[in-house]
Image 1 (cartoon, rainbow over the protein chains, first blue to last red):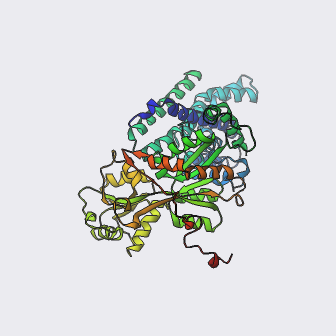
Image 2 (image 1 turned 60 degrees about the horizontal axis):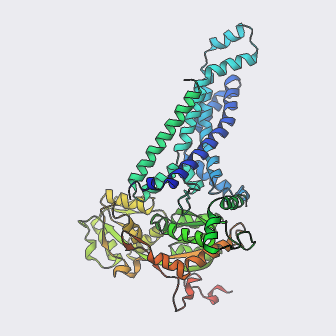
Length: 223
Length: 307
């Protein structure tokens, strides 16, 4: 029984595919939302900025089951977005992972932007740079922090189990292809069945995947 | 209906067309009356799914009709709740009282008895509470309560939990105290926890058999299949979601599924399914003698309802 999934590569492949598709899509979408927010908040000075920062940082700790439940109530077929028929689909999982990852990306990118030394900005002004030039310089200086934020968001998305279990339903078809079964929900499922070896092996697969994604991104980022 | 339409496209693109072509010849995959390529949302319990039975049934259903089944395995309480919200086409659960309530509220239609197995009381092999000396479920629970032996409860409104509460109340006991622990987890998890903490628990025979390689718990009191008390019977019912209440449900597909699993073919699949060489579920849908109570809530009388 142990490690039987290795003999069924379709099962493993489709779980990995669903996991990666959902989490990568969620990260791209939430990055598109988060980075502009981080830069605007990071550059601007306005009353309530500290409060807003605190709210973003609190969002990093959102319990994923609570987010999952909220999303479920919205997309449930008798909920406000029921007509979209999103419940128990990969799209539903993308939505909840976006909500979970966005504060992480925003928060880390924001602190990276803010921690760029004022001397750098002053120097940019000093050599006659426009506001845009200064912003670009700051972005360049902050890029590692921004990348770290995106990776942290990815780590949060692909490793969370609470919300995808609720909005996705851990569904696989009878032939072993996954509809909404991700690596994490598969680990939950195999543990529930007492297939501990399979669950552990899936855990190892997850770690390797996260490692790979980190390696690729850091390489592209020039480190 | 967005995702169903996509499911149709995807199904057409993959091997389902081939499966249908192989088994049914050139059946009307494109015809308006066909269910091929559609997807059935089945809300069910962990006990039917985790034992692997549903994979077997659903693969056969898919081969026969070309429609996929998306099985969402939850506790009975959660499965019924998600059906109430219109998130399932058909439910397969095992808590008659909750099923009846669901039917009375109008959410469920066309209920059928599907199959049964039984519950057993499992516990550590040294049996500190002496459950092995009892022959009634209520007596077994009394023995556990008297000995204050650790008992783990599902605590999750599942069919098993519902049955457990019925046994406590039949025994006239209200369990509580440190020896009574609720896991809030599925059957497999709960068996693992019971095993780790040398505790007793009530479990369906199917899950116990399918996990007997992993846990060291022993059956302290048998259910009716092995001559134990009738109170521990565990009947499963299947019903479609009322399309008048939730117009998004795929009622036709749901009825095709109910028809399939209650057919001689589906019933044979259930009867032939084994884990570790033992039969887990006993088909109950077909009999020569009619059982009209399976279609309506138990004890339902036309007069008493005034309609």
